[in-house]
Length: 409
Image (spheres, rainbow, N blue to C red):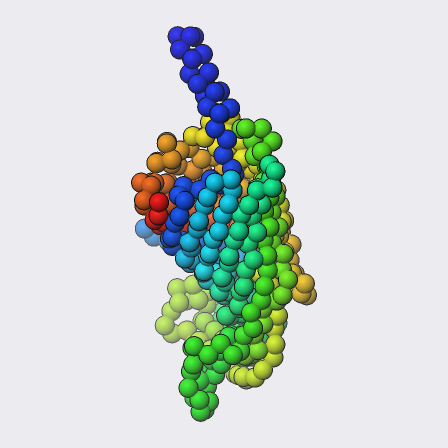
């Protein structure tokens, strides 16, 4: 028995010494395909809380467990078409065309303190929040080459912002009087930038027609990503990457408005049950359309990564640690940390499974993937459990999915 294990171990060792891979090996010389991914998550409510026959939410517990920033929802999606040429000695040429969507809504915890613990009669509880969202279209070309033992990949991108939304001065208040009635109000100033004039859609007195193909309200931006990797041993690859914003994209079609809503209820019970007898209403006022330029860059990113294949190419262990900045070179710039720890198992590059724990663009996720590669056709698909922190990503505070289809030879 010991001899059998020794033989197996020797075969693994020989394979790891004879076959060295790059960090992300190509499966075809030429390929075209499509890839899509999307996800939604929050930082408090889990799948266990929501997937019940009768939805019961413990407001006291919700208020006590609510993070300091309040309840936050994050969403993102990406759709792209790609074409790659992969030759020997690291020679590569590629084209990727896609659209990227991100958004966030945050409501501060004041509203949840009120719902969970109440307030003194006549005491006004104040709360706030923020909203932001972005849509970018991009075209990325890539070129790979090797100098000595170092493999380089340079990926310049032209991008254009299509949509940007932000809020300011979001305020909410809650007050109850001795009769038991409750009044809630919410008001926020919203600013929207778009690549084309949207006033014909929202203003009946616009006098012009909506032209979705008119791109005159946007200007292209430019950024570049540089990657380099080096084999430390035959079983270990290390690399680094950096995406550098160079020229910001611009939009000058602007809309501003004030959104307000008011809600009155006879008591807390009818408020939570959304009784039809409650008085509610909303109003969008002070709507204006004009020209004001905004400059937007895609996030700056940099970091390093390792790929270890101790038993050969059929099993890979990856690690990535990175740093990013959303809205770089602006007053809204926000820094964050990325990481990715993964394990991939592949059987003759035909069947594969992958597991990863990641943090990317401030979202924590646990990913599970599957690959079926019939050489001419390959399908990669997977799911992920997401959350605003590591614990909530395990509990299932959100979910996502991804799929990639490619064909070639």
